[in-house]
Length: 116
Image (cartoon, rainbow, N blue to C red; front, side, top):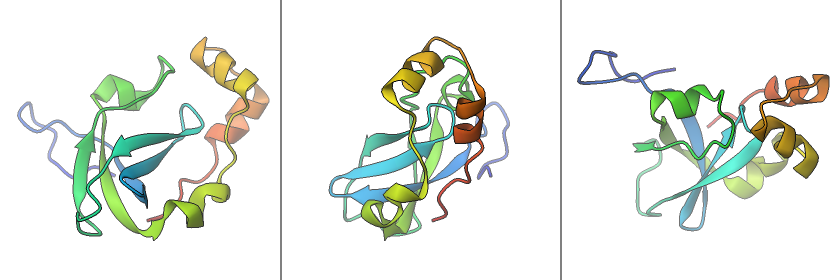
């Protein structure tokens, strides 16, 4: 989902859910198969949208290629959604970083994004 029109002055960024964890917003990355952490002002309203640069370590991430994503602040806490997705193991993270894939990585990447 994108929230702008995609012309040169308003590039289209993917819209992802961000889950509050203190002063951080946690975003599930379906490309790296891990949670990325971004700074966040806890006073920001639920439903507000903030642009963030992608912290992806995989070179094939569309988030990285597009210049980041828009994060919508969820009413759900990180603690309530953290275990809804399975993270890549350290060995899988190394493979993802090196551009290698496997059936297991494919399954991790096909997990549904946690809903806001």
